[in-house]
Image 1 (tube, rainbow, N blue to C red):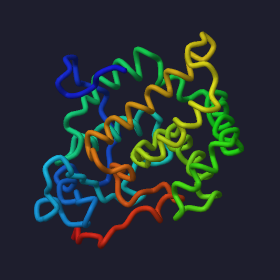
Image 2: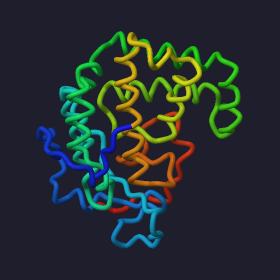
Image 3: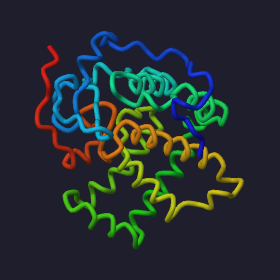
Image 4: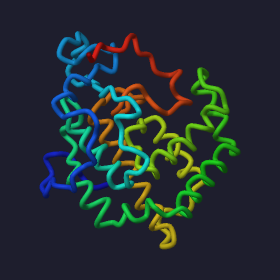
Amino acid sequence: MADFTSSSSASSSAANPPMMSVPNTELGRRIQCFHCGEFFMVCQCKIPGQEAYQIMLDDHELPPSTATVEDKIQFWGMLLQQGQLTKRFNFGLFYEEQLMQRNAMTLIRNVELKRRFVDIWMQYTKSDHFPLLVKTFPKMSENDLKRVGFETWNSFFNGHWWELCRLSIMFVMNSLEYCGPNPFAPETLAMRVLADALQMVEVALKLGAPNEYIYSIVAPLRLTSMKDLVIFKRVPDTA
């Protein structure tokens, strides 16, 4: 797997992200602790290696539906660089090498590829392995777990990467491992490119919050079927 940590060398420039309704000077005041909901400068949860900060944004402050997939992904990359988030992830290098040179940015628009990934998830939910997953997460119903896979692929292909968390990515990666095609077959190259891109999203999230599997860049978590797994003590005052 390619190394896109900030220590890797290459240009970190990418096209400008779409304008958002929250000025950059305001973003710092929107960063909260994932654990307690406090503004990160006054948060008392500061344990080295366990920090996890999110940005509080409302739906109308996210890229509009008219924005391109590229714009939305660049917006996610811009959020990664805010405050105490995943500064160790070189988004510019990832964008250039993984998304552009390997053609992932073009492939992500392919409706047929999305259908193939969704079909694999559907097949996985009918496999002998899926009940084991259900038992692992007793707070979630079987139907909720099924919806997580669909929501994950929708978020990925729509460019809403701020909705993704490590756990949901792990779910769909399990489906590829158990029910997916041979990853080394020439005809599955396009699928492998997109799966690699999704795995790098998981890497970025892990760099931002090494011990949190339900962590997403934007709070509150927007994968609706997983909200019961997340506990927010309060929402900080951003006024």
